[in-house]
Image 1 (cartoon, rainbow, N blue to C red):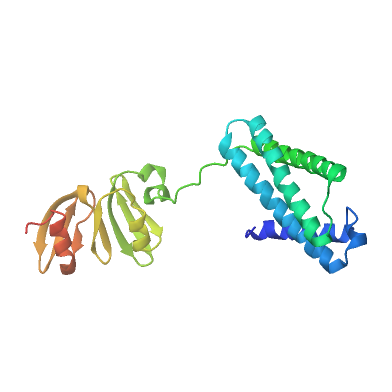
Image 2: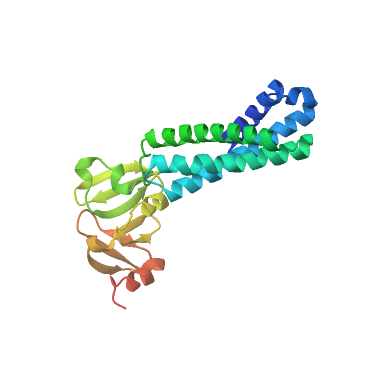
Length: 238
């Protein structure tokens, strides 16, 4: 009921019933108590149907007929209890004998019909497609350049994506691009560069940093701060 659309719908149904005043509620109740009565009635009955149909879905997930057979009577019993108690406490009317039997028959019939409609509607709705996973970096590239990643390099607001089949410039941040490298083992070796471990051909020291020779394209510089990470990855002798 916390879902805004569902809450508005339930309140709307309760408001309509309060205005119409069915089952003599317009004659025996004032407007404000009548609105409260139907709001409680609608909310409690919806909850009962939700619980009953949820139980039916778990009990017989592969059989619409069995779900209806479970959800209809169970919803009817729960709603009957709600109506009986609500009428008793709100109106002082405790149905007995033939009146109780007629009330039970009406509630059961309505509950079975409504449950059947919802279960049949649910059964005819095709399963939703699996939520698409966030794009990986390779999925952003043209098809002819989708291949193992070699390196990523920042150029202004773009990232140059280097694969074994070429390069492509993509408007994005380096941090976001690195997150999309998926299962490719790699390391950010400089504030402007990331490399894939399996594409490093050779490493040579240069000043207080290093240079990585890659399988494709130009060498990639390694900053002094990232040399320990390179050693931990086994790419630089200790």
